[in-house]
Structure formats: structure tokens, C-alpha cells
Image 1 (cartoon, rainbow over the protein chains, first blue to last red):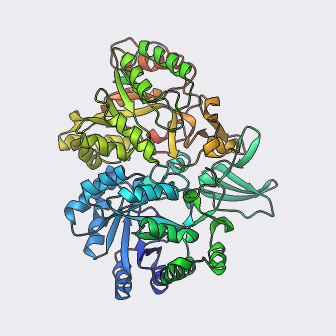
Image 2: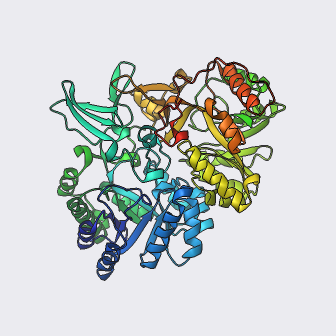
Length: 332
Length: 297
């Protein structure tokens, strides 16, 4: 059965994921060793053992993301994160950096290693590299591939595949986007942050509500528009005389309708994005996806996504609308 | 320090590409990177034509650069041809290329979209055949200093060449989507090859007219050009081996001359001359560990 992997930014969210049917939760440490390095989020060495116990007692696996790229000044911190997670008996480490993958493979060979989406492997040749050199068991695929491409890749993949099923949508190949550091100095790769909150400024002006990132105007909203978080790739910018969402409109990914296709392709796990979201989000999304997966396996031939699932998911979606993202490619 | 011409990141017509590389063959540069690194739909030159061009350039080191984002089986097939070419060193821009080249047991180089953020990663890649790396654009001189010091401790500093992307719009991100097509309200599959209308990319500004990004098909580049002209002497002292200039459609020769002159002066092989070169509208923030768009004088 396809595994449901849910996000937990804190202990309450972890409990919601576990109690609503996640097969695994993924979490991070309270520092820049993971790609959701946000204030008030994540686990320290004090509450992590309790969280792991809570999950394990209820049959839920725990994966720890150590998926940013250490520079020399941070190398010891990343090593320590790998050692701590391994010593605590988690079920897998999710990593991207070649140096860190190598360290984990040598120091903790018994520990399952997953290639993070930040590793940006989009072909079976890239997957073979990580499998042959660091013995990865599973890889999370970047959200740039169509279903046909995922299918093609899955046929020759040397490892289990995990794909994103729901959540905010990165339109760039993950692990290879420096837009955020270009404007703010911090990026997912270096700091585990994209368009970091500390660089955000909101201002009410006669032209409308303005959002800024390190002083750069990202968007300007009329009174009747919903303002969204000023992620760089979702801003309204100008080309010549036209002002529009130059890169992407704010939408969320939702693949619940292609669950049967993902299963037939041989996808091993569905990942829900959103460690930065609330426990209520984790609760809602886990619950709906559990229902969907169970209903599908109970009667695969007659799987029909329920309207109430979409309603529930749309309520917690960014931009209040969802798409199939790169899987269906209306823009193709 | 050597001077290199990075792969052409934009989409130009055949005539323009040929004229450009005829100029480069006579320019005071040491290394020329050839190949399509951005979009497999750009076919002004195919694999065979790039090979012919590579063979026609005499007296310079020629390296073949590979596609940065591999999505389709057809792209893997083309990638294999590059990796199996048997004549020229290959610059890997995706881990699939690293895999193929290391399996072939041939020496290779890595471009700026391969994530090398620490010395341990470099040491592993070096064992697999890496001889040269281009530092990811978002890394600073401090990180470079630390990496080089660690390579020295490992005893492999002299075995690995370090190349720094030093001039041009920086490649910042890759996507499955085509933003140039989007700007024209066209789907990617019927893009009309619009990129050809923008020989230096398509400018994106904020609603306050601040230069922000440059669209180049599926690639998003910096709005400003990175420019380490004023840091050449420092790079030379640090032990940087190669300085990369990224192709642009206008005034390439005067740019190369200015860089060549400055490097030669730093190395004492040419007298320092008063230069009129200015970094005025360019940026260098990443080098100083700051937001990339900033400029330090």
C-alpha cells in the first residue's frame, strides 16, 4: 500500500499526523540543517525523543530531514544532526548534500537514507548515482516532472520513489533555486529558508497593501484581493508595460485525483508538504488523504475522489485553489 | 589565472553563434565551454555541430557543457552522446552527467548548478573523476577560502581547479515551465522559440521599476549582471584558477580585454593601465556573503 508521509513542524502537529493515519511523519531539528528553518518551528534534542516515542508506540515511522547544504563553517553542526537522529533511533534520514550522505552512509550504515527533493534528482541516471555511492533506499522527486515522465523514470529507478501529493508548490527544480538568496541573502540550500519572514515587510499605502522582501516590492493588493505570503516566485512583476504573475500564480498542488495512476506507476509514498503550517492543517490534510488512500485500496476499480475532500483541502490551500502542478502541465 | 568563456546561456541563431565563436577563437581567453545547457528545444546547433565547432577551435581548451535539467528520456540519450564523445572534457551540469562520466571513468568538470557546498563533497567527486569545479553562484569568498583551506588539509588542493562565475547574468533557478513562453501567453510546447528574440534574456522589473530577474526560457537569471572585476586581484591571491565570463550579445571583446588586462596586471605580466571599465550597474553581493543583488564598491 502506498505510504502516507506527513509534515510535523512541532509536537502537536506530529500528534495530529499520527492520530489521523500517517504512515510516517517527517520532522527537522531547530536549526539550519533542514529546509524549513523557521522561527518557532521544529524539534530540539529534549522533545524529539518524546515525539519519536509517541509515533513509534502508535506504529508511525519518523523520518528526519537534514536536507540543506552545509558550508565548511557549519559542517560539524550537520554531522551532529546526523549522529543525533541516528542515536535516537529514527526510521530514516532525508538528505541532499553529497558530503553528508557519504558521512551518514559510513558512520551509520544501518540507518535508512532517503534522497531529499533538495537533491534534485530528476532522472534514473541521477538516482543511480546516489544509490551506487551512498546506498539510498528512497528518493523524493522534484515537482518538475509530468506523470508520464515520473512513469518513465519509475520503470528504471533503482530505488523507491516518493512524490509530493499536496501542499505549496515549488515551481523551480528544488535544490537548484537561488532566487531567495539573490534578494535576501538566505536560500533553501544555504539556510533552509525561502523568502524568509525576517525580510518581509507589509505596508498600507494609497496604492494598496504592499508586500516587500528586503525592500523589494513583491506585490501590491487592492482592497478586494487576498494578500499572499511574498514568496519571490509568486510576486507580481513587470515585463515592459505588463504587470502580472511573471513566474507563477499562488496555487497549491493536489494530486488526489491521480492517486490510482501514482499507485500503478509503482510510487511507494505520497508526501504532504507543510511543516511550516499549523497542527490543524496537518490534521485536516492527513485525514483526507488517509480516507482517499483507504478508499482506493478497498475498491481500486471504482475510486472516485469525493467532493468533500476537495472542499476540505481547498480550505487549507494557499491561494484557495489547487492544481495538479507539473503532473498534468496545462501550461505545456 | 586563466580566463574562460562559459557556455552560451541564451538562444541565438546559427550565424550569430558561429560569428561569436570565431571572435572567441581570437580573443585572449584560455578555455571555451560549448553546448546547450538550458533548453533541449533550442537546436541552432545539434550534438554533431557542437562537436564540429569544438574541433574547429584551435589553441584553446574546449569543454562540452551539458543540459542542466534533465526531464525526458530523449534528453538522457543526448546527454549520453556528450558523455561518450571521447574527444573533449565534459562539464556536468546535472548529477545524471556525473553518473555517466564517472562510470566511463573519464575526468570531468562540474558547472555552477551542481551543488558543491563543502570540501567533503569535492573530495568525493574528485575520487570519481572531478578535476575542476565551478563554485555555485550563491557562495561567498569566505566559504571559498574555507573550502580551499580544507582541500589543502586533505592534500588535494593542487589536484582540483577552482573556477568562479565572475561576469554575467547569473543562472539562479531552473523550472519545468517556460517563463518566456508564459510572458507571451504561449504554452511551452508551442513556444514559437520566442527566446530567439531575447539575445540577452527578457528583463523583469518590480512594479517600482527595479531590475529583478532576467527570463531565459526555463531558466531564471539575475536581473543585474554579476561582476567581480574589482575582485580579480583578490581571487588571484586566494588561489582561484579560472575566471568565467558568461557570453553576452554585445561588446564581448571589450569586456574580455578589460578582464584580461586586469588579470595580467595582477600577475605582473602586463603593466597596470588606467582603465575606463566600470561596474556601475552590476552586482557582486554574493561574493561578500550578502544578498546577490547588492553591490560593494
